[in-house]
Image (cartoon, rainbow, N blue to C red; front, side, top):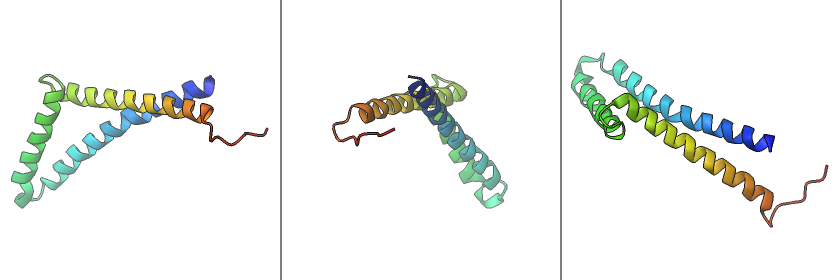
Length: 99
C-alpha cells in the first residue's frame, strides 16, 4: 500500500507542477519576445488572451485560474496513476512476478 500512496503522490505532484511550469514558461517567453519592438503588439495581445483564459477558470482571478487548472491536472494524474496501478495488479495478461 505504501508503493501506491507514494506513486499516487508523485504523480499528483508532477501533474500539478507541469501546468504551472507550462503557464510560467509561456508568460516568461512572451515577456522575453516582447523586448523585440516589432513583436510587442503581438506579445501584448497573446499575454492578454492568456490572462483572459485563466480568468475564466479562476472566477475573475488569473492566479486562481492557474491554480484551478493545476489542481485539476493533479487530480486527473492521481486518478490515472491509481487506475494504472490497480489494473497492473489485476490484469489477466500480467506476467507472474518471481521473487
